[in-house]
Structure formats: structure tokens, C-alpha cells
Image (cartoon, rainbow, N blue to C red; front, side, top):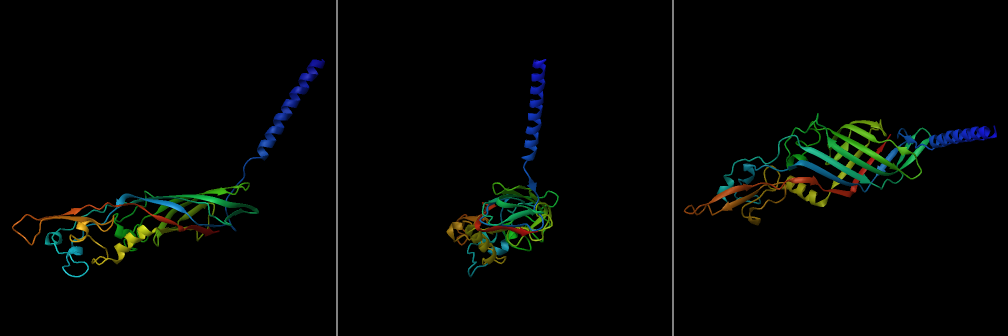
Length: 288
């Protein structure tokens, strides 16, 4: 009898221990909040990479090579005779990006009376298959607001922001943005927001391109050619392209000496596979 009582008592003790353990585990479950009214984000020093596929490239435009005097002069008649040639890939141009920041200052997620401080973020962006770019993948198209991969083209993008809370604070639900646009250089904004920061009207990622990319874009917008670009010339740097966007030119012989063979041919652009982003001028901001 005593043995049965001891066994029964042991069984009750084990069952009780199991119950208490279960209760303790449930109480310690992680809490996740969804950033709502009163939340704000301001993360700087964003390290980002933006990939372009296929690489952006500019076309050979015959009209850009017809000057015989001035800063855009092309002395070689064989070069001036080269017809228009397409190097820019056809639409759609695919854009993807990844970004991280651990410089989020006082950024705060709030759900009711529960708050969580944002320590880090990780962002991804991809173009939407149902809303592709409608313009060919040219560099001049990227930097020209009327031809570019962002507004006013039909291209739309999906972005996701994941948050890491300060240690000890509740976890924060991610943000999903559908149908976002890219405009004003490389600013990602607009779209339909769900999850954290749903309802925000000013959530955006503002990316500043680096000096090397700015240099290329400057050549694309302020060059002496009729369409505003800087193009290759047979008598400058042996016909090499001025940048990765533009085609170069290769000449043989001298057309001013017709008794000897002479010719000119395009050299395909290297193309731009990615945009250089300056972390110091890149940020993710917004309120709800």
C-alpha cells in the first residue's frame, strides 16, 4: 500500500511539473508587435547594392557623330558614316536591391502601449513581373526622367523591410510594399504598405549614388552631343568609350588617303551592371 501511495504521489508530482513547465514556456513566448500609429523610422548610413540585369548600355546614335568642328567634332568620315546601332537591351530591365542599416537612432515601433526600439533593418527590392519596365535598358534612359526606369514608366517594385529590435524589446513584424515606384534618382516610395508601418504616407528609401556613378551620369546629361551625352571620338583616347555606358569606335587607315584601305567599326559598351550607392547619403525614413 505504501509503495502504491509513493508511486501515485510521484506521478502527481511529475504531472504537476509538466504542467508548470508548460505554463512557464508559454509565458516566455516571444512577443511580436506591428508598428502602427506613433511609430517612426529614420535609419541612415545605409549600405546598399543595386543590380541591373541585363547591363545598361547606350546605343550608337549617328546624329551624335556628325559635327566636324567644336567640342563634339568627329574628324573621321568613316566614323561619321556609321549607321545607328542598338546596344541597349530591350525591355524589361530588371532591377533588384539589397540594403542594411544599423544606424537607426531613436527609430521606434509602437503597437498600442507596447513599444520596441529599432536597432537594425534589412531591405530587399525586386521589380514586379506583372508591371515591368517599358523602356529599353539604356543609361540615358535611367537618368532622364522622361525615359527612365521609374516614373513615368509603368515599372513597379516590391520591397520588404525586416527589423531587428534592441535586445530585450519585442520583435517587430516586417513591412511589405507592393507596387512601389522609383523616381528622383533612386528614391523608392509609394505603393501599398502592409505589416509594420501600414498606412504610412511618407515611408521611403532615398538612395544617393556614389561619385563614380555621378560622374557617368554627368557625362550622360551634360555632354556636347546633340542628345546630351558624351560620346567616343576616333581622335580621342584611340576611340575608347568615355564610360561603361557608351560604345567605342575602332578605325583602320585614313579615309583622307583613299588609295589605302580604311574602315570604322563600333565597339560594344561594357555596360553598367550595378549602381554604386553612397551609404552616407542613403536613408530609410517614415512615420505612421
